[in-house]
Image 1 (cartoon, rainbow, N blue to C red):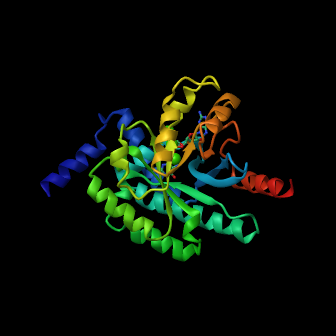
Image 2 (image 1 turned 135 degrees about the vertical axis):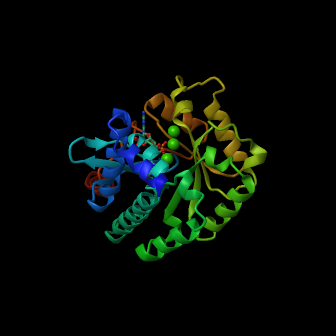
Amino acid sequence: AKESHRNQYEFFTPIMSAQASERLTVELELRKALERNELLLMYQPQLEFKTGRVTGVEALVRWLHPKRGMVSPADFIPLAEETGIIIPLGEWVLRTACLQNKAWQNSGFAPMRIAVNLSAYQFKQANIVQVVADILKETKLDPVYLELEITESVAMQNAEQVIVTLEGLKSLGIQVSIDDFGTGYSSLSYLRNFPIDRLKIDRSFINDITSVQGESTIAASIIAMAQSLKLEVIAEGVETEVQFEFLKSKGCTEMQGYFFSKPLLMEDMTGRLVSMRES
Ligand code: C2E
Ligand code: CA
Ligand code: CA
Ligand code: CA
């Protein structure tokens, strides 16, 4: 009792730094954001080089704050992870993304994947496979149209445990990609044991591509590595025609980036699907 009294005292002490109090405010607001429906998803299309078709979209969360406007995930995902809010938040993202993809399919658009970012904290949850299974069942989305993105840094911790979880997820029939690939220095022999579908080349390596002829770039070696492992490979953060042509010439499977489209509000993504169907 003495302890808790002390904590309470510290909690209300006026010498608590402005930064800590700001943080606490944001934490409380973030907890309420879910109930108040202040989160939304934006959708960024992924284009297949071979056919020019949109084969997937990545769901990217935003917080539409009543006073601060649109808040980017970089400004609240870390706090959501530290406080555990990422668990209900991540489930909301997954459910919303699956529902939206199912809704597009029900509207008659050509089926495509929806890619959802999975935080390390979600991935490490003992019941993650069951959580994903339940959401698939609830939303009736065909599992082949769900892709989970886990970062290379997550994949590199405790390989045995990671493989068990990945096998559980893959047994649901979903797809898995390794996000921010190339930043974690994982090797070809390491990756060979992973039940994954796709490598996603980190934006920083795409940024390095400045000419179509290309010196031997990291992006080119990742593409070659993916091919030798029979994995698909997608480039993120493609902004220029030079980057687009380079990746295409190297045999990259898909691309995502401002060159083709920025992340779109749901209505705008739907509009895009309509115009592609008509063209
Ligand atoms: P990420 O998974 O690497 O997502 C790609 C980020 O690059 C997105 O930023 C996207 O808007 C941005 N981007 C896309 N194309 C381009 C381009 O051509 N040029 C440039 N400069 N940027 C581009 P965003 O939406 O701000 O998301 C930032 C990060 O927040 C994501 O990085 C991801 O790690 C995290 N995140 C987003 N949504 C979620 C979520 O639902 N759950 C979790 N756990 N993390 C999320
Ligand atoms: Ca991602
Ligand atoms: Ca990424
Ligand atoms: Ca990245």
